[in-house]
Amino acid sequence: MARTRLLYGEWLRRRRRRREARHQLRSAHEQFVRMRAAAFAERARLELTATGGRTPVRAPESDPGLTPQEARVARLAAEGATNQEIAAALFLSASTVEYHLAKVFRQLDIGRLRGVLPP
Image 1 (cartoon, rainbow, N blue to C red):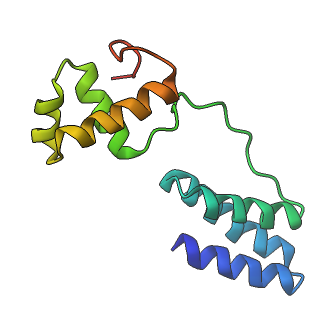
Image 2 (tube, rainbow, N blue to C red; image 1 turned 90 degrees about the horizontal axis):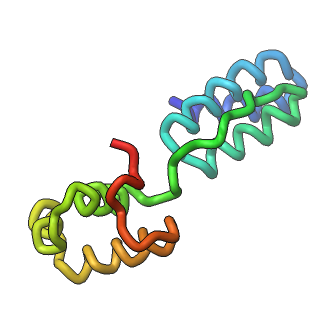
């Protein structure tokens, strides 16, 4: 639905129907942000700005920029699970868990996870 709103909003803007376009583009932007579809959200934001509309200013998020898989691995590690336990729980190999944890440590610039991630 968000993609349809984006395309329709773009079409409306190109037909100089800016007020109608703003409604569609704002809705599309909000949906893309909720879905964490950053590229589409940015495209909707740019189109909305072109119509004279504005997107709400968002407070900085506490999201450290981890992928969903990295977040799952990090959360289990923060709860005290071993690499083998994490691998079994997520159907991964232990080396894949080590890879994800190494990336998490680099991204968060830490040496351990306990107390870093929100519950």
